[in-house]
Length: 286
Image 1 (cartoon, rainbow, N blue to C red):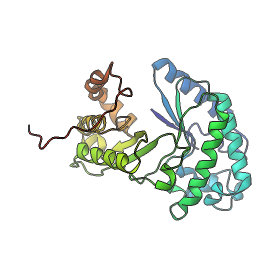
Image 2: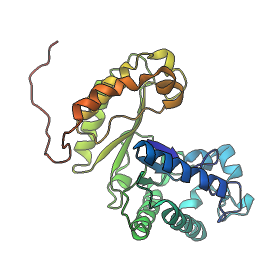
Image 3: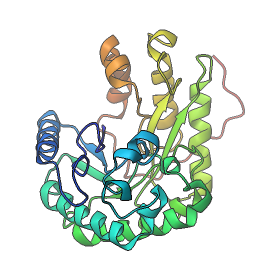
Image 4: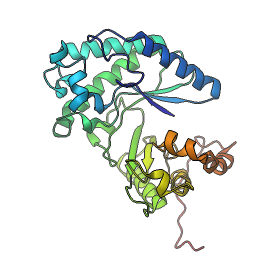
């Protein structure tokens, strides 16, 4: 599963002067990771999201110069020397406080980096920041958790995904159509990643037929979950496509059953121990 640290939940560096941490939120993350461990779950921990660096989020952000921070604009978060030092101190704190947790799967530096104003026009700046901070995490973390980041551009940025510090790459994809062929689209995305980033582990970390509300009415039976799961497994992904709409959709409708069949299918298989390749067939018929 995937948790965000942001101003609304679990974000420790929000609502206080930059460099000071909300200990109540830090405790909540302690508890969340402990509960995940007890449940046998692994957590992708996302350290920031664009919502805190744009519009109303930026007006409250402690890195904003208007709030006493070092940054005149959101893009300065990636370039300002003081901002980068404050961020590295936070990385040190996170590794020290949570790095021992066996439920921690990886560090995700940011959710959908295009959301930072100016980042699309300055991919090189964002990529250099990722290279610096990934190297810092690798230096700090004695348990060598993988480091990644994410984009809302499904195809991804070569400037980011080709960095040696990115231990795996991600896809986020929303069809925004109830009639989309989700199996075909998932297979297409996986093929693109295998082609453009050979040898890189690919995690399908956000997915859905809608990026907004409405999935519950559009697909109450979880057909797109089923089809996407199997397409990803058979197309070289390192995960099933992870639905964004967990609380209001999967949990609300009891759709965990959709995952039972694929769970049984892979149980006991050494998926990482073999060299898999696509089957070459002329046609498929039902």
